[in-house]
Image 1 (cartoon, rainbow, N blue to C red):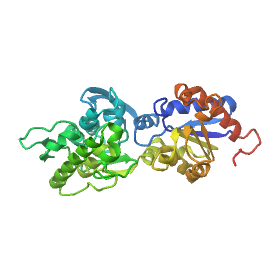
Image 2 (image 1 turned 60 degrees about the vertical axis):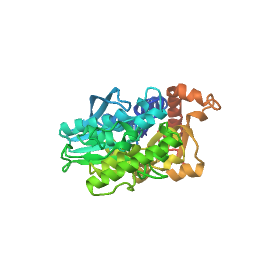
Image 3 (image 1 turned 90 degrees about the vertical axis):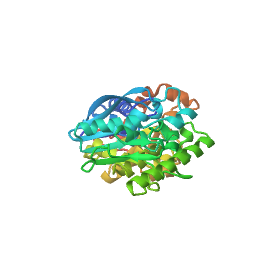
Length: 387
């Protein structure tokens, strides 16, 4: 019987998409073990690559010009299959869309408006179940821009629309939700891997603001703006969601989705694994290979490789990880559920020069794929080499 290898990597951020990683690994595996049946199931954790994972699984990509995080137009994609949609915030409001990278200015003014435009497109197309992946955001606007794109009006004391971004929320006085579409029959699932509340030392501004360019003073300003926004939304809706786990995700987009749009949250990687069909792909599998750019303690907290490893354990399939670099100890690797880890930075001609792995990861992945085939896949009549 031919061995079956399932390839379910996440992206290697800044270098390769998840499907490209899978392709290079497949090339190496089949070069060393031509009889192998390879099943590619690229995955994501709700951030960048979520739409790619959905389209690889059979969804159709839909292009749309939207307002990017700085107010300039960007070309984004969402995915559709029947009445189901996948929307990725990073496509419209992501850090990678900032032309000069994160700055103090963009930390204060970046908007989630384009994400709302993607949601509106999915609703207009008749989709009844929408998965919204909210990782990788540039904004700390409490999801206000997203709501405005869907028809909400947020105005100051003089009835003027507030300026974009978290800074604009300092002037927010009135919230009119009458222009929102009817979401009563829409199942809106927020794919999210963090549990931060909206406000305070563990909130959206304090924890994630510095990653988006905010200094200490900006964090204080943004937290005050989000507090004002939280009070306004609570006063308007009659319910306080500021302390809900995940309300602080994506600069407060999680809060707006929960408090105003009636969404419910699920771990992002679990949602994407369902969309991508990983569990059915494990039927009869000999080996499961996952991976990401870096394996570290954050991997334990909702990252895709940990979810893939859990799926492998549940199916009784051994799991190997291929990563750019690994900062975990051997016991920690085993705790995740991996029988082995292969890092690009451990390759003999890369060791000590990690930039080489970033510059040309494809050939290294193919080489590691071949090594995995030789090490773990059985020759004819021999058992698999785990242990």
